Length: 205
Image 1 (spheres, one colour):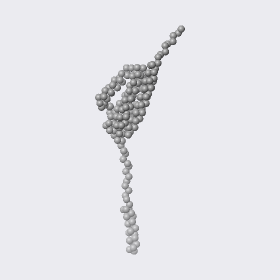
Image 2 (cartoon, rainbow, N blue to C red; image 1 turned 45 degrees about the vertical axis):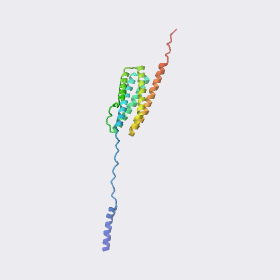
Image 3 (cartoon, rainbow, N blue to C red; image 1 turned 60 degrees about the vertical axis):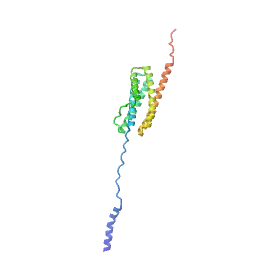
């Protein structure tokens, strides 16, 4: 009887021993959601500049549609579309990085301050022109302005550490080059048209 009692006691103890030896499963926690890193101070300045340029190009594109000839009107429409889309994407990216509102672009040097004033004065001057005169001045500004922005793009791309911003800057550079090339083609066409002599009007016998 004692032997049976011992065996029964041992049998009862086995499940307890097994449970004690089995490791308690650690509850799995969901991986923390990674928040997008915020822009650095230099990156915020880049974003502010891009926003300023987008707005300026849209405004000038509207002027081209209102005051230019047919080809320049189409060019202005392209700039309105491209820069409006770019600005929406830029604003969305800024919010993703914790920048609720893009600050106004402020010149960092006297040279930049002078450049911004010159651009503003030139834009105001465009509103006094129409037709071929508007085309000539507008296209000159488009070529020069886009060339300057292309040069700045390389500096911006090198400065930006945020990969999303770098990608946006690379895409912007491609768009700027397309705009500059199109403006040059229009300039060339206008110059050729101006250089072609107008045939004398025929007179009746």
